[in-house]
Image (tube, rainbow, N blue to C red; front, side, top):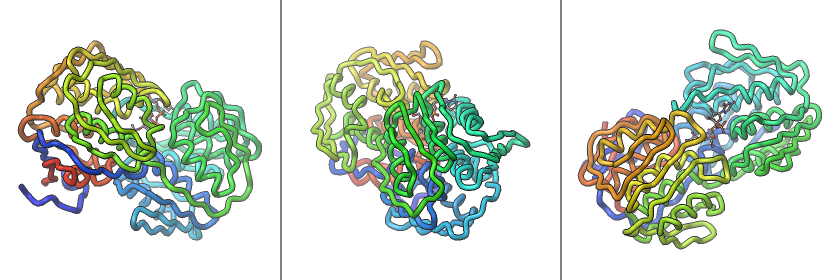
Length: 428
Ligand code: EPZ
């Protein structure tokens, strides 16, 4: 086997995985991607310095640090701790090649509005799992007095006055909830967000803003109240464990683990997944910060429907389908959050999965299937994770193209899996 490269870079474009090797030992979960991608833009609000711990070393983190540096922010990122200094911060246009790399660049809208009452940003990027409009964000900013114009693919947001407002979200959008919090924390007056998203990452962002002097209550519930303040001071936060990474490895253990320990997680953030796995007959030892899991035969088929938090999270919907393909019978899977999050299905079918699509969002999955290795392509971040899980249980070797998608959201995935017995390597 070619020696696994310790260094991963997005130029390494293929993963090779030989399936059938039992996973045993400890996998340490990193900090949450969907927290850090909001907390880095939020950090420009610190008076001067911010210290952010348990930061995942993923390409999204590094892309956002590049944007910070472009805005004149000094930063050091060592041993998963990111330290920033805003003394030379300037509000300049973020170039398209940076802001289109990831959807979360849109959090600079809320942060720059709070700091400067003005923001210019190209349309954000991100996984192609649907249209992913930002109408809820923009309508909410307009309610706060922001004038929004769209010119040459660029949003220009201008607020003579940035005022608190009562905002009732038509859909509990995670991104919009966070973006409104960012803009509102230094607006004049009080902002009330109704029908707010309740994901744990929103609580992490609110805790960070409050550490800098913001006045936010209700984060993690449907009603969030933000009282605008004039001045921020320095701040610090520890990023919460990545529940999606943890859930992905929990599924790997349920598929082919033996006493596999998923360490550094918060089981309360995984309730929907845990109850589905238990209903299917998976035995788990659940502790306050880790779960020990082993694969079992005779898995009972179950129905899974993705919902907003605390329902079954859409980001684990795709990986869950590999588990459903191992159950003894037909399981029904329905994706309700995105309209195009099934692009991986054709590759699972190519590996031998018996999946029938009812419409673009409903899959009937018949198991137990016996997957075989072949060449497949990661079309988006979680599709990539799904194909990794499939490859770990497939007979023979699977080649996965599009590794850069996977490295966006899984810190050191090949190294973490190799450490617990997977036969995996990155090749050019
Ligand atoms: C966040 O995306 C996550 N990304 C997504 O994770 C996650 O799937 C999603 O929340 C739902 O949990 C980050 O946090 C960076 P939304 P976000 O706004 O904020 C529609 C991953 O794999 N919508 O809650 O974009 C939207 O099109 C990624 O880590 C509007 O119509 O999610 C989608 O159908 C993928 N208008 C639905 O709402 C808007 O203005 C959910 O979007 C905003 C959203």
